[in-house]
Length: 314
Image 1 (spheres, rainbow, N blue to C red):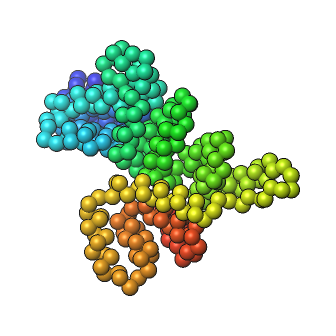
Image 2: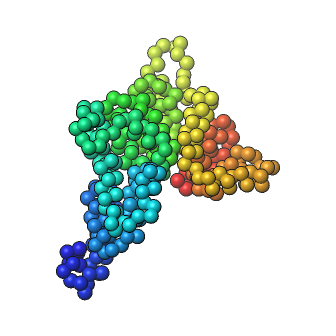
Image 3: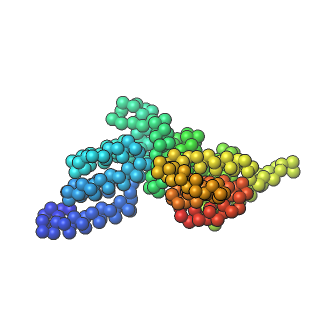
């Protein structure tokens, strides 16, 4: 269609529209194939659509975790002149394909001078702590990257970074499941139960927590061992409080300002209930989810209703 648009000026606009529609469908089919993004970017330039190219770059940077340094590059520039260059630079430093990304890490460890750009796991870890993974696509891309880290044998770093991903998108039951299996294999029973419990909360038909308890009971030898029914309330609340704290770093200044005003207006209300209402109003469902779960774990049954509402909104 792009070729037809160039050959037939009279129907150029119509053919470019068809070309863009097909390019967008290709991205929807596989957003990790960089060729699809390049194709759409070329069409934007050919069609002199600088605003559309701007939107495309913002979309790519959302997939890459909305890095503030990348977003700053989009201010006050001529997108038709340098837009594709920015796209290529982003893919060079941050490949969407997990194997291409891992090769940059591997090349650094083998010979950091063997490639024009390499990545250290330390740099990647620090960067992950400032990124925004609420976009499902970002969660998928970075989830595949940390899977490469786990396979390489660095399980502790995998667990640390997986918690950042889950803090931003707690309904990622597949990653909770993988975390549970890893903790179970490492015999970290309390953490394994907490992860499996999240899976069963999100997908009640997956009774992985109950199956885990059955496996534990089956492995017990002798009558002297006491039946284990789950971690202590202290451990559960500490685990959930830690996850809740990881969500707070993506709250906006505007939300924080709103919270102060609303707290003054709801002094007579239950503070935790007022807090949940504020988080729901600001659509901060991630933080609300872990707060509600922590309250339920502490025996606050009234928070169960909030938890159900939050799960529906996520």
